[in-house]
Image (cartoon, rainbow, N blue to C red; front, side, top):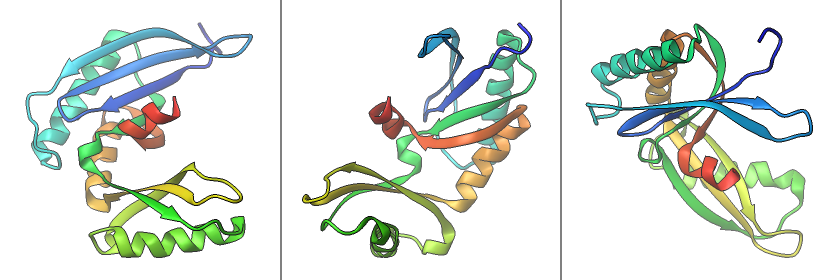
Amino acid sequence: MPGQVRILTLNLGSQAISIGDFRPQTGGGLVLRDYKRRDLAIESPGEPVRHAQITATIREILNELGIKSAKVNYAVAGQSVFARFVKLPSVAEEKIDRIIAFEAQQNVPFPIDEVVWDYQLVGGGADEQLQVVLVAIKSDLLEGINAAVEAAGLRPMVIGVANMALYNA
């Protein structure tokens, strides 16, 4: 249907790839229009062969869904990232980014300039300790995954981690 908004989701698991094709409802919410899943044969992340298999598998699923290209929101497998829960003292909102940047440098086990990192507040409030999930992925690994996704005809809009996607659902 022309003009209809599509929300395409891609889960790049360690052993399988799945794609969900959603449409927004008029009164709010989403409707799952189609869903496809394929197992992956190669389990070693980061290998060029794995990226080629990811691209081929995504193309196969997109072909079945009748999609040539689209924007996509995707999640990478939790094993591809470094994740750490961090508790911080309650601080003014304008200081949170600076404090978490310091925590990232202290906690991420790679040089900070070799990773892409972000965080999400998952608990706490004005008078409580802040609970933060700090997530980092090696830049070269993310670039390889993005290249595989883009080679299949998709344009990444949002990139997340599978377990955090479930938390946010």
